Length: 164
Image (cartoon, rainbow, N blue to C red; front, top):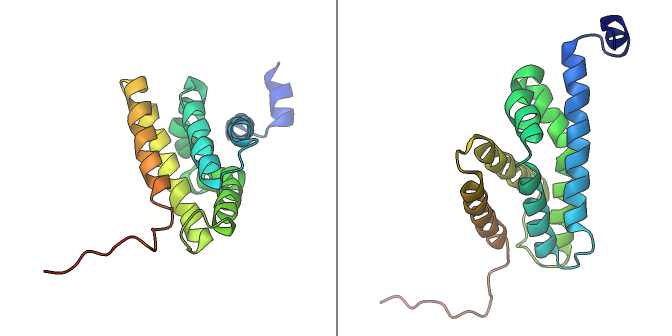
């Protein structure tokens, strides 16, 4: 492709980068959706969605373009805006389904979705900068499992500790 043809479709390098970035985001959504497909247990769907996202973030192209270069090339605000456009709705719908099923404690879903998504993005950043990818993936996966398990309702019939 000639430079003229390139700039006919993209007004500058940032616009080209954004198109590549958004194509990777679309692929990530497809991968996460495939991990969640057919799951009836909402907690398991949350867990499998998180696993799918983290597994996809082991891809060097995702690490470099989405996680490492995206914020600096697009600017943090635009990077965050695009990321939320692709993933915040997915996380919100998952949490709403879990809340409706009684699988998670009652909470305001919107802030919870932002916090969960932020944690997953930070986990992905940790994977992108890890020197031992397999070990980091195991450790991050265990931490995400703890976070998701922490959303479960507490057992209302569990005996309370007596004060001495």
